[in-house]
Image (tube, rainbow, N blue to C red; front, side, top):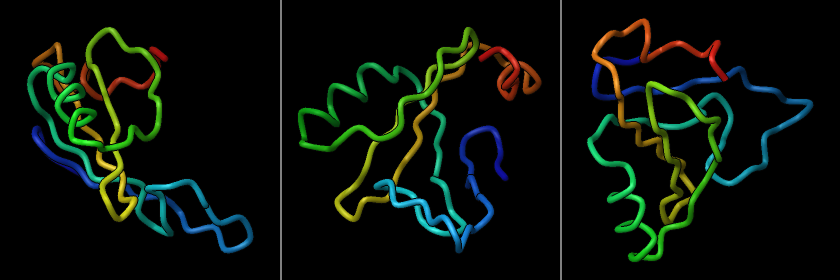
Length: 94
């Protein structure tokens, strides 16, 4: 669920196969925020010692980066290259 500038990505809890990746816990996948210039933010976060999280697929209308905070919560930071919601949310392109 989300809006133009933030989201909360949920997932089904799997008791028989818990997700033990850092940044992932039962019922919540990650928190996300829209921003400008993901590459500048990536460099600043790496310089401060934050670890990168998931590696997203390439997409022509957005650039996403994921980072883990000190408690291993994963944060998605996304830069959109389109103003059209249907293009921003298109997951069929890879």
